[in-house]
Length: 230
Image (cartoon, rainbow, N blue to C red; front, side):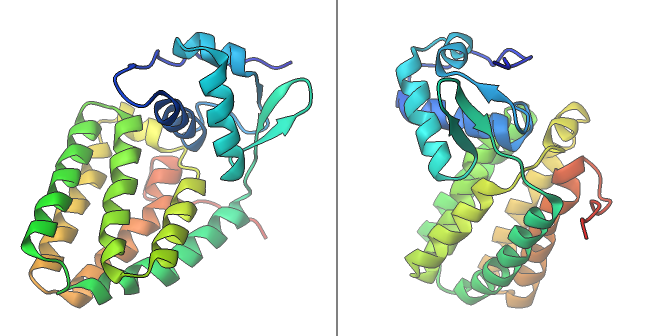
């Protein structure tokens, strides 16, 4: 059986354990810390995280339902691979859904709603500055889900969040090393300012740019567009 070549940091037990383990492992997969096609076992991951195998196994079953891993009989779990074409397709769908929805909810968010959204944006920025990818991705996902929730279309919000979870962003590790992750986090504050000012087209354009990072800046750590499969 293949074993992870890195050492995942132990978890704090202050949060719900299963959710914490799921978030930690999801981040490891999304950022490439756990490699595509790598086979891992719940006991081995549990040892690295400082928890028993049970919450790890439960977390991996959750991630299997998200398509991030698949079970391997008598071995554990294999991290699924994603082609450039599949990532391009996910990004294309997100561009069709999220920017127009963000534009549509401009004017629908009350002042107290912006207070909560800015709190999430602040936490996302703090995580970026602290080089906490786990916290950054969790708050980023929560912030965007919070904005889309004002569309009152639960199916749309859940689909967009699901697509965001499935995106691989191997360039984030490089951005952390280069101290550039905060630049991406700053776009959240700009987006909220545009939305609160009632700038529909500005909000739409920035959301297009923000999602575009998934196949450029966040994918490889540069602004260059990633290579696409035929």
